[in-house]
Image (cartoon, rainbow, N blue to C red; front, top):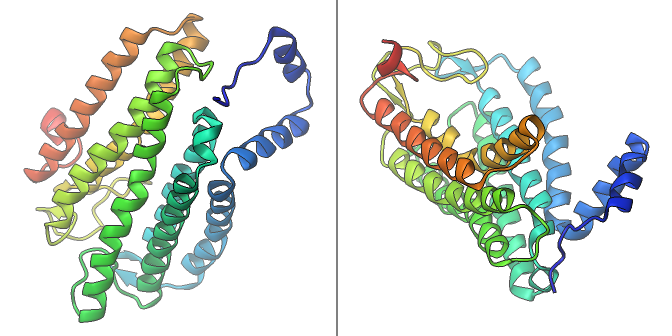
Length: 292
């Protein structure tokens, strides 16, 4: 039996009339019930941002030209968004699938992989060095290897979730939103692993330029004087968010959801992601081939 989110008009009106705080409590209880491990990890990752920001403010050490704690904070945010998304998407996985032993074990494996990534990245920052591409010692080489396996494992979380949602034909979602969620989830895994596999075979994420993180775009930190492989990694990992948000936007603006338009956006977005990878591989900054 599926655990579809099917709400009657009466229930929908009752939901609209709920105070905001009560609505948040209700949704949190729902997410906690559907995905207990992911919900707990989401809260943990949100809390981890506080000491990381504190370390960034107090620790003035630099690595590759920028504060050593900037990268750990970015990973806190990225992993928080990813895990929170899985926690929400779990409601569209059939309940009998969520109750199976293999699924519960798989979730714990993903949680452990994410915790390893956090420890590895923050540990390297505390030591004043880099985590990724660091093979300066046998310990860091081993950690980098295990981190690569952990990264593939945690990324496969969206693959499994997407496949189970794809198989569930009783989600209560529109065709466009159903496609956006399962295709975005599966595509995220596929594209991210392709991009990350190429990145891991290089000596760093920068191609050309001064090979420092100082010449960078605000907020994102992408290189402006050469190629940056993190651009394609960013777009690959966020298709899981972009497609559902596109459907929500069209539903809000046009009062309708179009499956063909959603498929079209999925194709264009995927093509654009690989275009940014091509740019970086050729030493061009983000949209450098377009704007010069």
